[in-house]
Length: 115
Length: 114
Image (cartoon, rainbow over all chains, first blue to last red; front, side, top):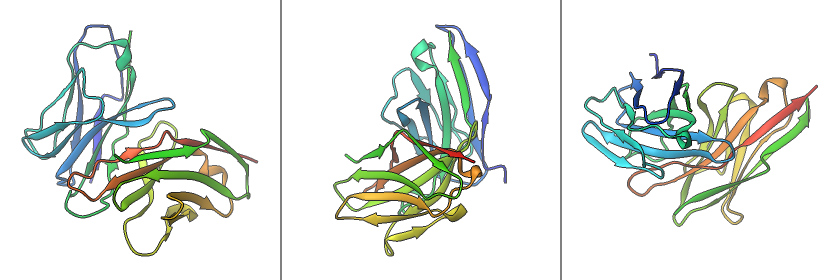
């Protein structure tokens, strides 16, 4: 199993550009999520999905869109990039919501810089 | 809503010394508690977790943590630090009520000197 994969690893954008961060998992996990990591702030939840076709907002959703057309893929779209979106983005997945304390598996991250 | 406080953004120890990373949580219902480790330029990896049962939890790489309900704490320890333990450590909490969103602390960077 490849686990959780993310592309690209690095990206530089100009203010106002749009782009999609890709995330895929091959573990047949129901739950997928996107976090951003900023210095001194830990990881904050952007959006999450509890299954194909079902998404919801997390703590910091503004400026981002998601969709979940398949179990495997959960792309994150930046609609109009802003310098405040400079961050490291992590995708994570876990098997189920119904069993307590399920481990979330994280991808290697995408480091995004918005100029 | 649940929250996590990690005391100390940086902790420095000598190789062979005790490692103690502090985590306090706030939760309105019995929590699930996690410690994750992040090595440089990598994603997060689960060290250990507490769900129910035994309050002393053992994880990978010789780490362990004890859930203390009365103190709302879940401190991470390792008896003897190794250079390879240098990383950032995150405590996280979730609640067994519907969607189990993970809430992370701000992280503690562990520095290990020879």
